[in-house]
Amino acid sequence: MTASKHTAMAPDSRAFVSSFARGLKVIESFGPDNRSMTVAEVAERTGVDRAVARRLLLTLVHLGFVHVHERRFELTTHVLRLAYSFLSSAGLGASLQPFLDDLARDVRETVSLSVLDEAEVVFVARSDIPGRRLAYVVTTGMRLPAFSSASGRMLLAHRPIADVKKLLARTRIVRLTRRTTVNQAEIIKAIAAARRDGHALNYEETEDDLIGIAVPVFNRAGLMVAALNASTSAARADEARVHSEILPRLKTTAGQLTSMLP
Amino acid sequence: MTASKHTAMAPDSRAFVSSFARGLKVIESFGPDNRSMTVAEVAERTGVDRAVARRLLLTLVHLGFVHVHERRFELTTHVLRLAYSFLSSAGLGASLQPFLDDLARDVRETVSLSVLDEAEVVFVARSDIPGRRLAYVVTTGMRLPAFSSASGRMLLAHRPIADVKKLLARTRIVRLTRRTTVNQAEIIKAIAAARRDGHALNYEETEDDLIGIAVPVFNRAGLMVAALNASTSAARADEARVHSEILPRLKTTAGQLTSMLP
DNA sequence: TGACATTGTGCGCATAGCGCACAAATTGGC
DNA sequence: GCCAATTTGTGCGCTATGCGCACAATGTCA
Image (cartoon, rainbow over all chains, first blue to last red; front, side):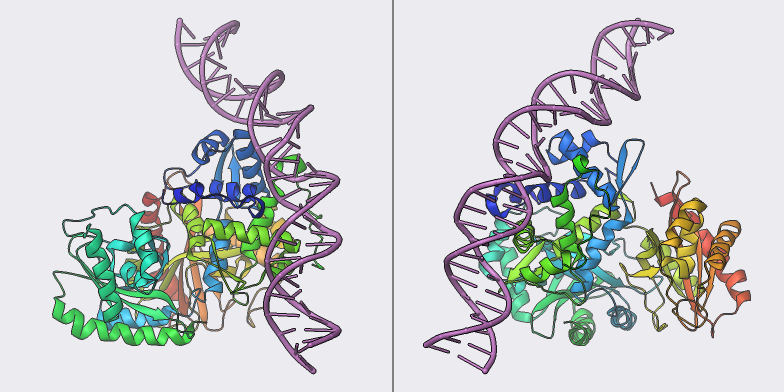
């Protein structure tokens, strides 16, 4: 639950519509272990009154976001419409795929495009070559801790350092592998390096045998909007190959993407 | 604001939280042409009072769903969290990808997994073989008219026929190509055929030269939750190959997916 | 610089939405 | 099968909440 900080902040009272916030919380209360819930379960998970949860759920049913069957509620595909609002408005909805496919084929590795949400990396597109299988499979919508992944560090690199430190301070760094950097100072150093070098690296910090390399993707206005990442295996690629072969190819694709982005 | 006839629907009054509904409308008001909007623009697009739009936007800002810069508001990646709630709760979030990748490699065509939202097909995952490029590129989150695509017809095939007819009645069928079926009776017939055959076909109805074939994906409970689709080109594949080669392979993958779904 | 257009927000009012408390339904134990 | 226990559904009165007007502030153009 990374969203717990919001509840702490003072809702600027007059300029805050709490029923709306409560409603969004209801949507977010669904997850892998909560595929379908009763009113009471939703009420408990969200901390709102049972009667309120019921009204919010019925509102969602009315709007088509939720489906109810035998007093159990579950989200419908309609929810994807909300994400589509973002993806399409960010220009990440389509037409980037061919570039990712070409890139994946050329470097013969899984590549992915990701954006930042708080302290997490969210994958918005990916491509890989058939037959090659990483233990670690990236899927659209998937999330990873930003501080422990190449893409995350790259995405953080262009944020004001003060913001990054603040974010880091309130994030719990989970050790994912033997090599995960957990020391805050070292993480900051890695992010600074990413900014300086124009790329970020990750050696088995997210998963054993997994090497990640990420470069920034800018929009035409020059703002960094995404990170382009290639994942390979330590067994398959050494540092030399990553630098000499994969990195330059990543950068050309990143450049191509720029022209597609608003 | 001219379209402020939202009184049409009967919001079960007491059991309906209108501020929440208004707020969701605000999120949905963003799109490809509305990347960033002022309060007034949002107010106009949603039909709510300017002051209300402002409060809802500020609420979204407060929760991290929206970002504001020089009085222009835009959606943030945080919105994807909502979609993730659905995808993960539906078990479509991950781990299906390897099966799609194998399938794409074997049939040497683009394959995709999709779900139904009202009269639209929403793609939730895809895979294709590098180098092969269809004019038509499917991306996660993308939408297609359900009545004119193979996946759509397959997804509709297991709904009660009365519901399908009702949906069809209130949907405007857009002619996408010379071969798009626009006749309602013929569409119903195609859907019935999909149900009977256990697969749906589409010859250049969505795009010229594009052939689609879809099979149902059931969850372990036996409910159809998605459609698995292969897209190929009329130039590349004839009907015989689709039936003898692609279709059986689609079905085996669909079977594999079943075991992954709740 | 003044007139016009757009955006920000204080304030009073009405009601939407809250949450209690009771009713209905479901479950479970024997 | 029956009653107790638990869970779920909902009517109702109160007041905080959110609405929308109207004015203030800010920005724009000539």
